[in-house]
Length: 216
Image (cartoon, rainbow, N blue to C red; front, side, top):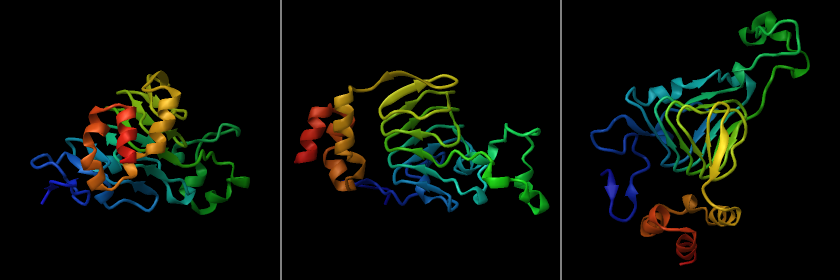
């Protein structure tokens, strides 16, 4: 059964919407060990779920970087994650990535100078718009929105709306005090039944109402 009256959609379903196989709960894909996706985060693409994996680019296991996506994220068609394997050295005579081809060439990365900006981390309840690109090592905070076509090259604060290339903050969705309260509530960590009971406060309320629900 796809839905339950008390808990909503089954997070273990690959395709939670009947007759809409373009929508995929990503946590149910056969993800590589260096990719982690939280429950209910979905990808929407006419090309199907494989397109999500195909759009994680330059992700070489030997570099050790991870793509970590939180819970309840909405990821639109064409969103791409560029990982650290796409970086090239700029401090040497050549930018050619000899290291990635292995063999004897792998020795020519003295002292780990191959650029590695660390993990790419997407928070909870993040909306990544159509055809957005996320560059290596970026952290996108909880509740943030990335506009269609944006190129995210730097960290995005929680509950910020960013747009452009490079992406810049257009506005904040809430005040600083409200953002702190929302992150303290962390509704995305509630169990499914509790979320369902308080869906009105989460999806159609305000911070005060959500805070009341959190203390109920």
